[in-house]
Length: 416
Image 1 (cartoon, rainbow, N blue to C red):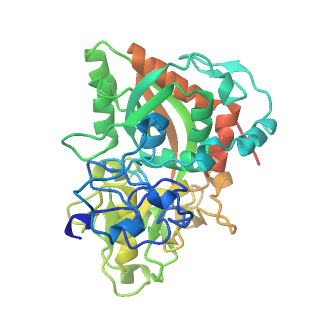
Image 2 (cartoon, helix red, strand yellow):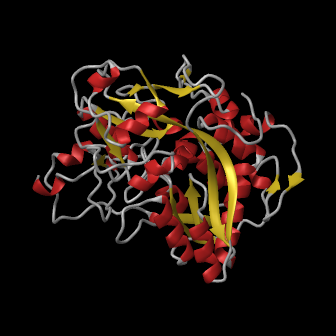
């Protein structure tokens, strides 16, 4: 049993692969981890630790061997899109998809219905972007295996069904997640990997910096960036916390160490423990992280969620689409001072009464923390071909319908 302490269970629904061995339901989607006897027979070896099913956790392995997986039936895009960055992403994030089911990836009835609801849109933008109606209509999708890294928000797109449609439309296109070798995952690390040629494209969630453009220029290459969606950032706490809302100014004070106890915000006498992935990721939201703040770090969004659930005074953050179904979290209403009258604070909920993300507030900018999601590649041949193809797929009418379903704001105004 000693060698199984680090074993994890793969969810057959969303394919999140860091579920603890004593779980019956997935930490991310809440679905049963053992819906059928057939799925319970699959075992997969991973560098980070062995992944096994619940029945096999309590059986002594023979000769330390595992049942082989037929990799000829697996696609690297499918296997890797949910592999946590570093393991980073929740849910992801950031995200290793090593177990596939026929039901998830080859049921196209839902996808067909989406196409029927999409208005015909034809237009051409710069950088090789051509807006088409259906994913299958995207041109010049290269064959081969392409590497990527970056933010874990795209895990929500997989759950919505986008990856299944990509696999059906372009079976020869595959990709694999590549984690940093010696550094914790962050936006700048992912861009450095792209510039070094270690990966072909990046899922980014903050503007490219002048320094990054300068680095590219020194190498005589160009960075190409395409917006693919709009997202809202939600702050969450332990469910028993009595504080229900918080202002941007108060959040700033927390990260600066000026507010260190929930009692200062009208709550219980509990120390505040911000749980973050990296200082850079927080600073990208407009906050300054001080050494005075008692920060707790997590290597990915999923671990951050677990730390907050286990720590009564903790506070974390994530893309709203990644945590909208987390029943064990409490989501804070965010407030921002009015531009007209700074003494008036306008509070906005990140979710609607039905649990869906507040996309109208995200799109109108009335929600305080909104960001643009982009896909970044270089003008190197492989990078440009793969990055442009993925951008066109996500920006297609059908791709943006999946963006809408995932809880993001579609750039093409799709409404269900």
